[in-house]
Image (cartoon, rainbow, N blue to C red; front, side):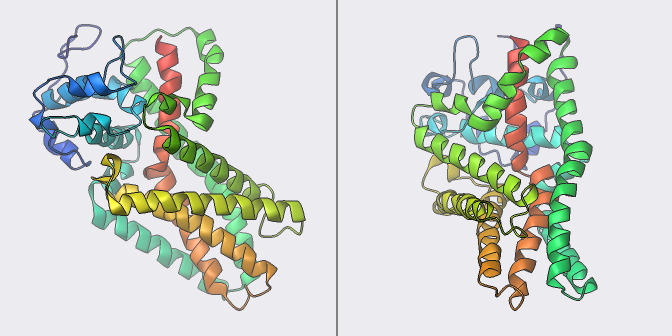
Length: 357
């Protein structure tokens, strides 16, 4: 396999400082790799025709950025940690693949904000503080009127989904398509885009490829339940107006789905904090923000509805302000620029891989 040029035989540009750039995205000691191939040998998802992570380690060591941007392989890894566990040089190939996903996210993002947030903890903290101040400013502007705040929160969710999806996420997916399909010169018949679209939604909702990881079944199940719970809670709050409805079915549905979200994420938060498993040993701030804010999202939504049913929310407006803060930070920071995007890009990566075959 040639690691020095693209498919059209043009030499790729080499960035000698690429290893330093990747360190900012969380890579750990990948230059210690001496190309033994253990990582590829133990990876249950690696095949003779589609081998990794060794190829991505070599491309990274050589600084071949264009080849990396054209590749979908970082998204085909589900980070079970086996490659890092069996690496004799402790080059952490699994963490490199995670770092490449963060790096690629920053390259897909046309705003440039993803890279800033990934590489700088102070920038992330400033962003979270500013959104908190913004929520307080809004609450004060309506004299902390609960009805007005509830109305704004419900309206905000719907507008945020449409606006962020249209102005940020879809253009970023288009850039991903450009880097991986158009720029490398891959010809795909229009009919194939339609025929393969099912691959996108299957992987989006099931991430079934993760089942190929030998020791990943329980983790896959947790992710599957969490995705169903998260999407169902989103539908319940936005489409069914959970906080404003009197429908017993909708109320119970919201309780169940919000409970699923915060209960399942307890295990993820615990794992990140304990750092016993390979996948959690080198957790970056973006990883922590994602699981903690998802936990807060489910828990605060559950508590707001409980306070409504107990008729004590009006005297405990702080609970809704807390929930609204988490919601705004989730929608404006984590979804468009943080780890949530991995859910989107991985799904499209499986779709694009189908188009390439």
